[in-house]
Length: 313
Image 1 (tube, one colour):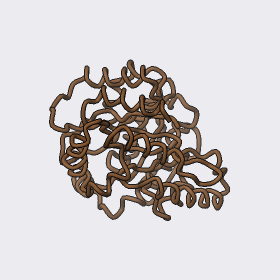
Image 2: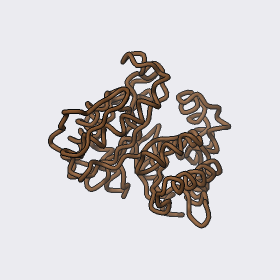
Image 3: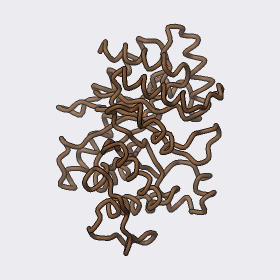
């Protein structure tokens, strides 16, 4: 299993937004051996939230050889052409280190403020993926759909990666979502607070079936698990307070439900859960290949504690 870290984009109460904080976090993740540096995406959110693509660009110099990942970005909200341009620039400036995770988003308010009907989100996402691929292949065929068209459009400079960055689609694991991943994506990104090791294993098996139906090699199809909220503490009362007062409140889930999903708890609990995700078997294949943590307190210390646990597996 490889590991990544979400950038600390959300204000959990300390109000410490600054460029040095992002830079120090990226450098620490790099030096500790994380392989991915990720940014999630919302326009409107109950808590203050920095812009994800902008934050990734701000830490390019500290990111070393880590893969930069949008996990996930919202091309339907941002506009697929504008997002294609921003992602192409990130890929170009990073020397071809961008992985583009996309999804429709789950906030009706994001759609309201940009004037797009929320019920169109999935159809627009599917077209957006095709827009990205068309724009990242200068000289290739254009795309024309119900909502978008790239006729006559040429986006230059092209991304550093031929054909553009790989596109992963976020899905919580529904059958229709997994079929969409198999049909359109280069990889699957699941959401930690919306799954468990057991549910991930079941979804992985369904994804393999969907990939086979599309004539794709399931063995070569990558997966990842994002938004793995993280707080590791030897003080069980402190960990429980963070689970109840911070994470459960943020994602509107019960603490009991989240306890089996995210890395908030003692070292032993988090180690066992990490091992369970790694071994979420879809025989004879293992489960989660890449896990992206998101510390909710004491960012740099949590990165260190997580890597200590990971090294014990």
